[in-house]
Length: 464
Image: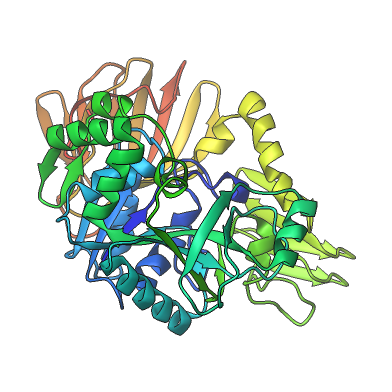
């Protein structure tokens, strides 16, 4: 099978560890791996190729994390300039494949703990898809969850392949309890399996406007090596819709396989708390945590110590620029908090203090009116874009490695304990031609130091 991995989404319910620029699927939450990396590992046994659907910034994140799994060579990327939900994303991927290719569509931010059961379900899904059906996976519910969508089926045997009666949105608590009591409802895991051609045919029947726009976008796309880049204008012309609404709720060839394989979408901190290791007091194991008479707390720290006294059943999430404290059972309300941040401090939703780029990373050490100080690390063989700034000047102090600096028509080396100065408006570039990372401290001085004060004139990563 070919695993189409949907890498979109913002993961806002796990704020502040999840931000728009680095959502939860790329955060190393479980055993030192990200959920995206775990998704690839889950599906390696059943899938011989990976087709990743992502955006421009997260393309580099996914590529970097794949390299640690030795899975780059059998991976292909679809880069969307803007998201249009799951139906167009899956259609664009399928248009790049052969009609008879069996695809397994999975999210990138879910957790599966029972691998053997999962592989058994995938084999059953593949067999059913080969017979020409659209297959969805329904997880047998263990509690009346209000954070999941539900699939209603007939009262068939739990080991059978079931006919789908209806898809349901996330219910309230009372409705969720009724769902569980009936025995006809399953959690919608967002996992699908079908032939690429079968899905496209159904899409053309039930959502022809999406199908036609995707065909045109795919035809116009820029293809190079293993990357399929969709143009913004074509993407904007595609109607936005989910695979559930566009196809699955209308199709006559939909089947559901009931399953139990330790699935969770880790959609809130309470869900994350259930799977993280605990100490003897029931607190999350964290090297930075010191507790006194404190029990059953979720503790997620960064670099500084977290100490509690007489604190029980709380969620404490510490990042360099934001601290979240909540009672357990209230983590679904983070979404309401996000609405407030949208109005009052949107920057906290967008970026971490440390941001990853295709050339390396930077960490904001201080950011106040008039100046900003960063720690910048450039990977060997990489270089930043040829650029200029109209509102700030920059001072660079190299602390490790040897930087190749270009200012105007001049290029020269800057070694450890040496510095250079870039005036406002000067065209410049920083490169690492050596074999070890270049680390430098950058001091920006000016009336405006935002990341959007960059005019890129040339870029190795097509960001001009």
